[in-house]
Length: 113
Image 1 (cartoon, one colour):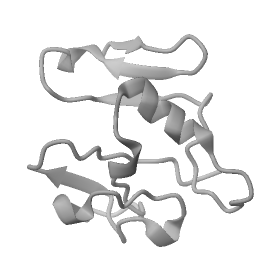
Image 2: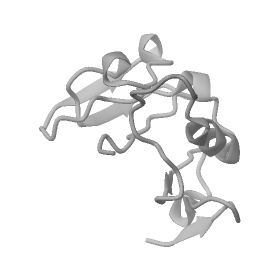
Image 3: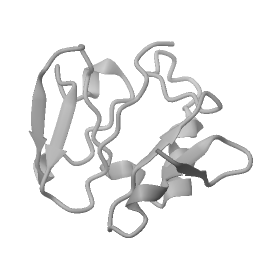
Image 4: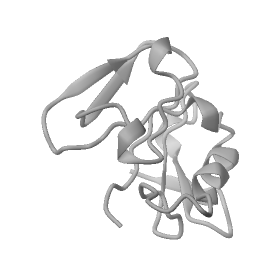
């Protein structure tokens, strides 16, 4: 599947196949550090940069605590903003997400450092 690199400094790529639809489907490469934070003395700006590049509201992100299962969760407006900065604030024990709501960015961060 083809993807367009949308940043010269960082590896942020957007899938071409969705260009005609009102959806953002993208991924980052290893130039971004998207892992859970353990040290909050210096915030991880890579997530903010990634969202800015894609014009996504970072405060609305939803992220699961991936456990390598078949669990899929329905994301509603009440889930909006459950950003997994640490494992404690992720959507619990889910490896898949679906939604019928608009403007809720669903993300999967790398859980391994």
